[in-house]
Image (tube, rainbow, N blue to C red; front, side):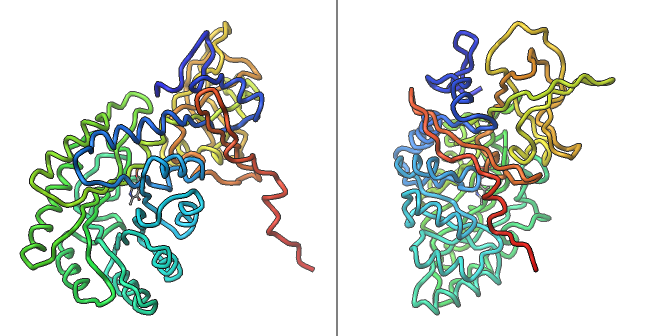
Length: 415
Ligand SMILES: *Cc1c(COP(=O)(O)O)cnc(C)c1O
């Protein structure tokens, strides 16, 4: 558990605010973030990187709430975006376009124009066709696009197959064996300027060895390019550092950085990182209330007011999230499957959890700050949850709960 969510007198608190007070004020389901946890995570990165030219680009897709982006922007962060929409969010949140890197396999012409207009730092290009398209778009605007190629180093990230991205069979990046040829091609395109190389091998990595293997492989390419006169200004090692959801033991941020810097010894390029989950995952929880207890023949169900539309990770990846009572009470503990009200068997938050609860009890679904709200949907016409940020002894509503009217405002009935 993150040190920013703790029990005090049998009450789970976020910083100095009891989660039961937040549920009382903002209702459930509700995401709760700790500003101190966000700041602490960012500082762990920047402290470990002191003395090294670097840029920490928060991966927006892990949690794009404007308040979260603004906290990081004020700390000096850059941003890793994967769509034009995310770029608009970064700018709306006070982020600096000149610290934005643009990843993703499917950038449209409109998104390229938008990013060139804003003046982003670098396009992380993922294919030969994208090089041609970007060159044409930049040319039509009279601009030069800074690029890096996202190289697929073909290393096994040893994570869930859906969030592993650095293997040959994945759709991401350019093939390792083709990278040098593609850099040559890029060097010959008049509206592109080569500035770096990047790789991102997957998410929720709990060991440093795959990162190191990837660095060793891409440094071979960096040296080959240098021999051909293509000097890189930066190396972008992506994101992917994991967090503890249950019993994982990922390296501490400082140890991860130390390992990266060790593998980069003698290299002078600016270091760019794209952390997402590790900065926000354990900085947020999802508050939910038990609606019903339903004893079954084989198992007991706790039916709660949060569902797979609010937190998709259990349904999508069979992911584990800790589930804690917001108030520790004297009910007899029993084993429950904690499930939502959605009409899908995959709609569960946690299975076989020992909990002392009754109808009306509040639960905190832990480690929900990353890929929680950002993957939420309106399935079953469920308005998305409210989001609040705790800052010491203050709590701010940072996203109002959606209304049902908003959900069908863009629809119309035909004659
Ligand atoms: C998703 C993503 C990240 C962030 O990954 P985390 O596992 O959340 O750190 C970074 N870079 C790219 C290109 C991504 O797609």
